[in-house]
Length: 446
Ligand code: HAM
Figure 1 (cartoon, rainbow, N blue to C red):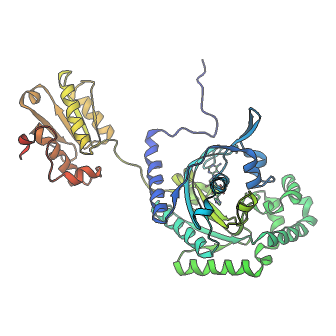
Figure 2 (spheres, protein in one colour; figure 1 turned 135 degrees about the vertical axis):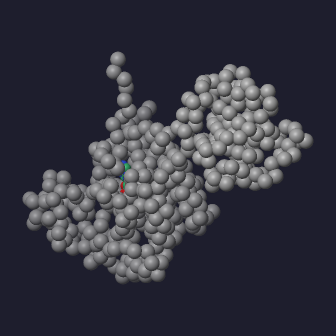
Figure 3 (cartoon, rainbow, N blue to C red; figure 1 turned 180 degrees about the horizontal axis):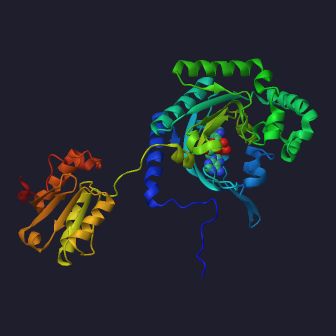
C-alpha cells in the first residue's frame, strides 16, 4: 500500500527542529512582554466574510489563496493571517471600552494555498502583534525598532527596513487615479494579471514580480507625491523618531503590500538575502487606521505586523539546544532498573533533565545513547553499586568517574552541571548549595 504523505506545503516539524522553533518563540514572547504586549489566541477557523472584508476582495489571498469551504451552511475559512481575527476579537469583546491602548501579540499557524517553495508554505507560522488606540508615529517607530532588535537577537544577517506611507483613504483614492492614468496607455505591455488589476486593484501592479509589469511601473507617480499634509507630517515624525533611535531604514515610495487594509505607515523588514533570495521579506506590517471601524467597531486607529517564523528560522544563525537531557541513568541489568527510576525521579525533582535507559543493555550501548542525547553525566547502577548503596557518576566531558553514595549523588550531579554552565531549572540553582535529600535527611550530611 502506498503510504500517505502530508499535504504539499504543510510540513512536519520533527523534534530535532522543534528546539530551534521554541527558542525563537520564547525570545519573541520575551521581547513582546518587555514591550507591554499580552498574548492573544484566536480560532484557526473564522467566518470567510471576515477575511474578505478585512483584506479586500481583490487581493491574492482572498481571490486565490484562502482555504475556504462550506460547512453545514456556514462559510468558513482557515485563517490566512492574524489581523482580521484580532480585530474581530477586539470589537466582539468591546475591548476599547475598557482599555484605551491595547497591545496584543500572537503566534501560530496560518494557511494560504500558495505555490510552495523555500520560505513559502501552505501552512506557515506567524509571530505577529497589533496595537489598537495609538495613532502616533512614535508607536510605529517603537515597533520597527523593537523588530530590528528582535532580529538582531536572532542573529539574522543583512537586516533592511523599508518604509513607505500609503496616506489615508483620500490620498489613496487620488493615487489610484494617478496610477491608472499613468498605466492605461501602457496597458498592452502589462501581464494579463496586471491588466485585470488595472481595474480591480491597480496598486497591486507595483508589487508584481513580472518583468514587463516592473518596466511599465518604472517612473510611475509615487504615493508620497499625493500624501496630504497630515500624512506627510506623520511620516516625517516617524522618520525623526527612527533617526533618534538610530534605527536604520530606507524609504521606498513604491512599496505596497498584498492586503488592502493599510493606511499611512507601511513597512517591510528583509534579511538573509543569501539564504532567502527573492522571498527575503521576514516581516510585513503597517497601520490600518480605518479597519476597526470598517468591520463594525469604533473608530480606533491601529498598527501591527507579522513575521514568518519559518523564514526567521532560515534566516537566523541561532542554533537549537545541543542536548535533550543533562544526565542519563544507566541501570546495568533488570534488577537495577527500579533503583535507576528512583535516582532519576530525585534528579528531576531538582530540575535536572534526565532519562533512564530501562532496556538493561550493555554499558557501551547506554553510553552511546548518552552521547546521542547530549547528556553530560551518566549515573551507572550495577549490582555492586546497589549492594553498597552507591552510584557511579561518570562525567563524559571531564572524562572522570567516581563512586558516590546514593544520598549524595544528586548534589554532586547538580554542582557539576552548574559548574559546567548547564542551564538547569531554577529549583536546582536555588537549592544547589543547601540540598537535603527528600527522604532521609539525617543520612544526608556531607
Ligand atoms: P503578510 O505580509 O501577508 O502580512 O505576511 C507577513 C509575513 O508572513 C511575511 O512577511 C512572511 O514572512 C510570512 N508569510 C506570508 N505568507 C507566507 C507563506 N505562504 N509561507 C511562509 N511565510 C509566509 C500579514 O499577514 C499581516 N497580517 C501583517 C500585519 C499585521 N499587518 C498589520 N498587522
